Amino acid sequence: MRPYLTTRSLIPENQETPISFIRGWQTEEPLFYRRNHFQYPRLPEDHLFLPILGHVQQPRMFSYQDLASMPSKTLTVALECAGNQRSKFDPRVYGEQWENGAVSQGTWRGVPLAYLITLTGLHSTAKEVVFEGQDFGKREDLEGVFYYGRSLPLTKALHPDTIIAYEFNGKPIPFKHGYPYRLIVPQWYAMASVKWLKRIKVIDHEYQGPFQTIDYQYYPYPDLDKGKTPVTVTNVNSIIQQPLPFQILDQGIHQLEGLAWTGLGRIKEVEVSVTGGESWEKATLVNSTAQPYAWTQWSYLWEVKEKGEYRIKSRAKDYNGRVQPEKPFWNRKGYGYNAIAEVKVKVV
Ligand SMILES: Nc1nc2c(c(=O)[nH]1)N[C@H]1C(S)=C(S)[C@@H](COP(=O)(O)O)O[C@H]1N2
Ligand SMILES: [Mo]
Image: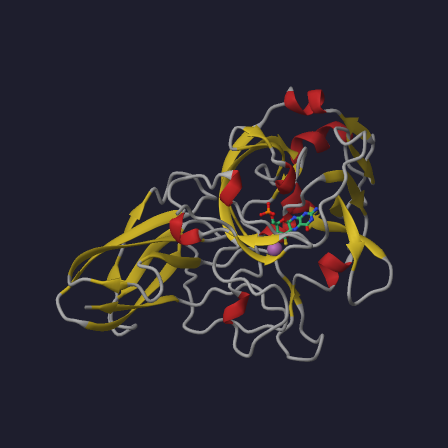
């Protein structure tokens, strides 16, 4: 049997990738996780035109031909949903109950937004850039209808690797992943990478859309809005792909395998414990320096002589000194889970 997506909800479609079975550099479309707040949009006739307007000197409308003829960048980027592994929070929290498959990696080609902004110019009052998707619908907590929209501060919007993508893994972006244009924001959790871009608007204040100010905020207290902070940069994280949870293994040598990624710099080290966290050994990193925004594969040869139950753990560190914690940072909406990964196995 071949691996398949696991459905968390059908309307809207939320499905996780079979991450234990993903090898190599790119997650192909059929196995790439899907995260949607609304039903898929119906694209209007003018969907190939992308306007940039607002606090710019010269509003512009870009056609597909315009974009395809401009200087482009091709980046391999691990996209992780901020709610990935939400099901592991204790006490439990509301929201899609993702296990560890709301993360995938693709190669995106597109035009740096900074390049497009050189063509429109900016007003001195410009503060944020708002990205609006074509998809819309109702929310449980507010009256009315909302488009999916997010903003970026100017510094991140104008980062040379923030791109308006029009290709995924060498082809036009698949419809479910944002055709024809998708914002790709490397290093940030994937809520920032707005699909089905409808328009881009430069504003002179802080964007107040609900996917910015209500969702994708860390709420540290169970029932208070106090102390909320926005979800932005992806935490340092790792997972164990092999062995599988509760796998039964023979005595002998086994290759432990997994992935590690971070939104700040690069992965420096992955440590593995086969003793439930008492002792740690360094794993071997594959391609840790190949692409700055891609995940790193790790492996470790484990020789097990004694029968019994084992708790295998992995812990990643990045070059910014961040390391996966023992316990996750609990927050009311369940974002940013990155506690040390664990898999229990039995050796017989
Ligand atoms: N227009 C639009 N963009 C969106 C979303 C959405 O619902 N609508 N979901 C965001 C979230 S929360 C995630 S995790 C990623 C999921 O991207 P994928 O479905 O390509 O995996 O898209 C982001 N961009
Ligand atoms: Mo997400």
